[in-house]
Length: 192
Length: 270
Image 1 (tube, rainbow over the protein chains, first blue to last red):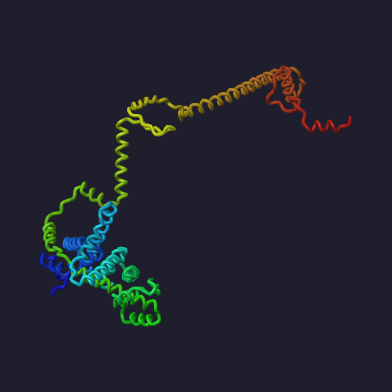
Image 2 (image 1 turned 90 degrees about the horizontal axis):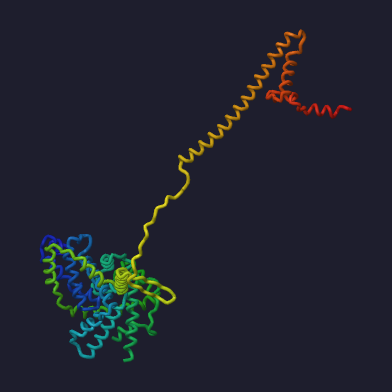
């Protein structure tokens, strides 16, 4: 089995199937990362497409110094940041906030459990989604990269181009804030 | 669910403060600390209730996020990335067309924040208004009655200015000529005075010489005559009698007494 770096080398040599293999390996993870940051199915899907297209167009810019996974994650995070910026501008100009609507649409599909259990789980995951979405972008990125992608601290530092200690401190702050928000949610649902 | 609730909130619903070892706690939580760091932090946990409680709560948070992640990954829609890549591959082979300036401006405008869009529109309107006012020859005035506009104002005729030579002072040539004139005048005056004095002396010497000649002639006739000095004195006295002032005369000859003579006269008893 070829490594990601070998596949990228072959793609650079003109083998289009090689890059297809890279996409197959990473598309779900990149999508999950995008969804974790953006909170919208459609935005996450579009951002995933744009991530791989941007990677393919910039294959020449890939240097073997970093891992392909770090390179792809960095592109994905940049795509998410630019999408968030555009969404913020749209929101300021009065366009409907799509994030919430699409997120809710996504969470209402694919349930196969009992109605009560499904409802409880949906509420809980919705609370988590809201809690993650309410984090500042720089905290949200590290949480999603850690929890969704299982990247190491060093890989996150490489992808975001920040010091290792910053990754740890941001993750610690993010977990503290998530904890407070989920506690608030638990207190709200407790009397039910 | 109850287990998770217990793990993610405290009895009073507020998160306790950590003890300042957050980074170590996170590294320990995710299993990314080395053996020495793990042992050190594990030892710390035995004596720090806040970190124990926080570690447990963070575990609950992670569980909740993982649950959400599973749901997200299970519902991954068709991404159609391969199809999109095929299009991208075709575009990559074709030379990229340059975007027009209008398209770039439109994109910049659409991505700009609301305040910038508002500012741009306002600036454009102000420029248009000023251009219209200029074109309509409108005069704008502001006084006690408020703002007033008057259109059709005739264009102001600016009189051609007559250039008047400005007397800024003397030129260098004029200054030099004036100085030369003044110096020459003074030199002429000095020269005239000097010549007048000189003529007077010459006349006196000629008169004195005449007197001396006549005196010497008399001496040949008189066997015993006065001394030359006396003859000279007598000639001078005659000239003085004639009203001619001797420019070479001494103080005594002019009748001006010495200070010592005056003192002697005072001291001499009568």
